[in-house]
Image (cartoon, rainbow, N blue to C red; front, side, top):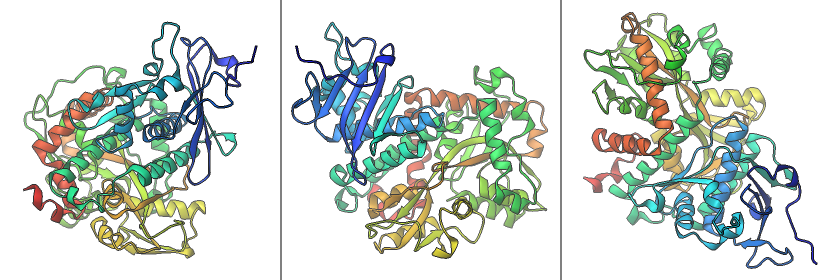
Length: 526
């Protein structure tokens, strides 16, 4: 009797589910083997790449299709987030995206899913035990979402070894995403008939769901230990200490003294407002916008102003005018320091941390082999900004030698026109939505961030001091924001609903397009 080709190393973990992936290739990695364990499987499941099992007896087979690639992207990204101690986020997207491709395969229950994950003794498919789906088969329109269940352990092997570090998982995920885009993605630039008007706004809406989901799920202010670690990292940031001449506490005592019920958002706090509070949320902070928009669903608690193109501009205006009439401000770390360092500006103080904002290093389409050195970085340079903080951090780490790069001041919308030329040697550090626009419309690529802490940066909620002097106000703001955050974090339907509300009621997608300098593409949407 021939011996079955079963996965190695699974015998010790047969009591629980497990996914193990094997990749080959360096710059264009490809999946060639999948091993699955689950308590409902009679034996470990092996699946290999090809049209048949070949030399692997009793093994299933898969081909390197768009849906299989999408599954690989999701699993690698989820493994990286789990390694960082974060909850995995779903793969989300509309038509023509990896998420839609994987969701369609699941809707059709294609053969490779059965071959890869197997079936129990009763013939029931196992793969639904590994994944959760939102808006399956895009029945409600809009984007679909596929999430790896957080309890599923993942092992990933690449370059002939098992990956251990979070940045390795994210590097592999990024390469897989780039490969998917090259083979299946439709460049909006090459399909200009699909660019204009409502189609562009729908594309922005789809990216909004991804961005908000990532930010809400990857930022953790609910664990006291994790929150203290974030506070320590901010207070010890060298740029912060240099500009302030001291450390910085980004969180108020009000937030730190919340009861466990308030901290964990166990109960929706009844509004204590007699009239709505005016809050400034710069356009590139969609997760913060979603939190306060959700608190407006049943009662108009906040007048949200998202007309500022970034937080640097908001701080600039407040300092130039000697104040503002906003009750609340949402700030990135760098403009927050600018505000606090102004000796004459003492009317606001930090209240609590907000969801982080993603940042990406973008290179022009003309770069075939993007490097970090020997190029011109376009950033907001003339004032402290998150991109300038990131570059300083990379200089400090030795990831980039300062003598080997040039720095140019550019507003993010100006970067778009620069990168549209496709010249080599151009780089930009961009936050949402600007890296999306350049990726979609200019064919730009992302360059790996060499820092161990990937891609996202802190944001802080400031409140007017006289507002916090009102009895119970600080505690209400902190507990209400936390409640809203967790409600959105735990429900894809609520995230979709609030984003729809932001786009339809507040015209948020239009504002994002305008702040990216894409006003000329909106003419057709009138």
